[in-house]
Image (cartoon, rainbow, N blue to C red; front, side):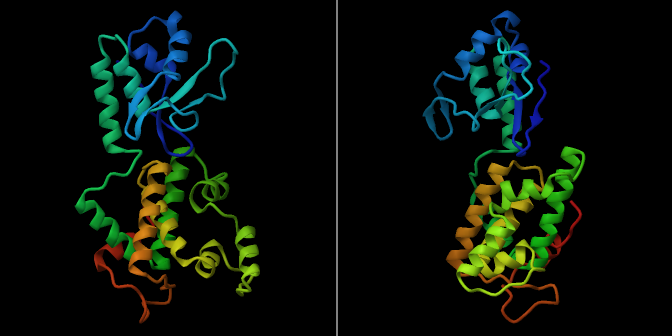
Length: 262
């Protein structure tokens, strides 16, 4: 049962459809017919009964060299559901392996009460520039380890984490007549445009740096933003020290989040 679990560019754990097919002990000459059925069948996903969605549950490999045999990447949930739907004698073992990996690196947020409180404390700590900057640095290190270099990091982070470019931020600030200077980086610009976004971005960086997928980290970032809005948290630049308006938070947690080492 040799099934390699890979990591996509967005940090999502995936398996190759051809390798899943082989691990299930299915005949190679049935692969093309089976994979067509797999991506069009109906399954009980965590979010409901539906067909797999392209670029969400699966994606066609860009390295496919022929128009006859196509390679696909399946996320772990789809791979597990596909395995269970087959008549393979080893489907339980394959599905169990995939399920265990899903539990370690989930794609969707389902927090316990304890985990919710942990996110709440992280959100309060992430009101600080120092924690946000350290989270970004940890994420960069994780990205470099995963891809082998820091090439395209800025583009990757804009597309997957920040969701807005420096030029777009500057344009929005001009529209609101909010002053800024050319030396301001994304964090300083966000602070002026939408401070709570700094918290969201920091939480996304924090979890992505730990190896969680971008979709999962984004969900946590969204939750953190909602918590910050509910508590009316204020973002502060603490690089020169804590101020009177800095949000109180657990001191040890702050120290942990301020560490740039991943």
